[in-house]
Image (tube, rainbow, N blue to C red; front, side, top):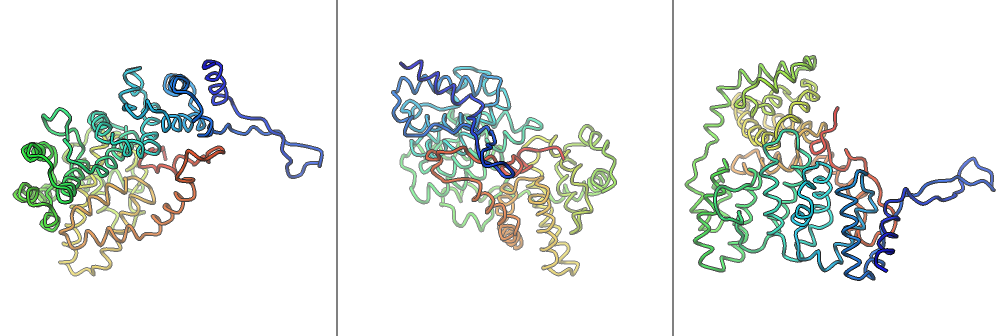
Amino acid sequence: MAQPACETVMHWLTSAGVTELLPGPNLQPNERLMVMREVSPLPISLLSGLSINLCLKVAYQMEESMFSGQAVPSIAMVETYCRLMLISPHSLFRSLLTHLTSRNPTTLTKPGNTILVFEILNYRFLSLYRYQGKSKTLMYDVTKMISTLKGKRGDHRIFRLAENLCMNLILSLRDFFFVKREGKGPTEFTETLNRITIVTLAIIIKTRGTGEFEQLLYLQTMLEQILASSQHTWSEKTLRYFPSILRDALSGRMDKRGLAIQAWQQAETTVINQCTQLLSPSADPTYVVTYINHSFPQHRQYLCAGAWILMHGHPENINCTNLGRVLREFSPEEVTANIYTMVDVLLHHIHLELQRGHPLQDLMLKACGNLSVFIWNHELLPPDILLLALTDRDDDPHALRIVINLLDSKELQQRVKLYLINRGPPEHWLSSGPFKRVELQKALGNYLSWKER
């Protein structure tokens, strides 16, 4: 009985669609237009009636089709798979990443499979993992993948999906946790995840305390692991809200912003010359390859800062196409480092311009206009990382004002409205019809999909 039912389900989900005859405009009353309607996901009421054995068989067949087949899986199949996992008891006791790689170690080596898995985890399974208390296990699995992705050139979309998932998992934790399951060596986190982990630890310790003495003993080692791979210094303004045990550990950390600005001043002439050749409106497109292959890392880290300086409040002053081509060839962590460096240079530049007598309001308008070009108009940089970088500089009098201006921008409000229109009902498992297809660029943005422009 299970095999025929399983075959029927798979035949439905892999079919091209359902043929229908519909009346149409400019047709005679007795004429009909033949259309192919995309198949819909199976309803949750039907899946709930399947036996556990049949659920396992159907899930196995779907995973074979989705991750080992040659064809791109339909939306109906992916949504049905997600619904099956939500109601199947066996899915509550395993990690999806571990399960898929144990069945086929090459599953997540294919970019298409990896993107699909991370989209499922981000947009469908995150609430399931939270409800079942499996967030830590998933976090450890994802950070292992992030450690291999953050230095690879070009894998921006996969990396941002993984990092976004890990950010949500860390922020949702309510109990003390270890940053590494093995407990040894520096963290495998990115710079952004290290910063978010410190804030989450501060919230947990301040609101729930440390339940066991062993946690206090391990906390120092844990902080050393985080700080060994993080360059950030938390401001006095932020540390005032941290619990004393964290505040004491972090307050003596050397602020390297002064050294970073000195390094920028030494490299500024070279960086601006390179950026002028690369980003002028009439720049030679072939210089992109020259820049990628021959520029030094100490200069590449200032690429976005140099682009911001060259704008002078006029976005048309730079060639955003060339900038996007270069950023796409950077590793994801290089792009993140560029954002953090650009924020420090930007704030330093505002202070210099104020000393020269320029009105603060004009400087803020130019700064926000330039940043809007990066994150909204051309979608060259992920806005969440930029906003976090600015928020982390809360001891600067202008950083939070820029954050507020960016959050109040019309571009962001339009994107939020578009998201609310296209996302569908929150109870996605109850939707009976075919899901609305959203153009990739509108759904993700170029800073994740890096479409050729």
